[in-house]
Image 1 (spheres, one colour):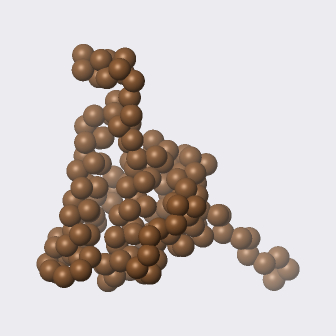
Image 2 (tube, rainbow, N blue to C red):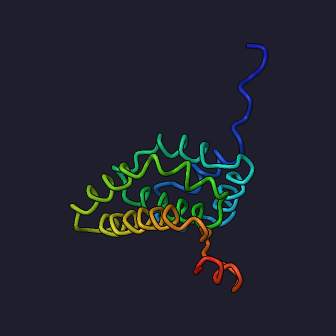
Length: 146
């Protein structure tokens, strides 16, 4: 080949660096790049294409870090993150049930965190006026209550 494969977008690298099996906190710079990536592409296609290749059901630390990064994307990512993520609702529920059967370590935490993320997705689907970060002015709150 004359030209090597183009480099993957920075958010792809950051997603893989943020969501790994090491029992250390997600680095903020990687989480930030993931968030900015959703604004750049106006959605979460890249996030889900990378995450769908990760063995989230076989490693609880990996799953926990996925939950953490996905939560940040729902909160601070592009508004289309929610829409792009709805198709994975059932997978999130299945994974929550699966991790719920394991009593030790991160398994229970993953189960509960996945339920919370599902609930958050449902809330914002039913209440589209409320942004992912729930920050609204008094005026916006008044309008939402009308």
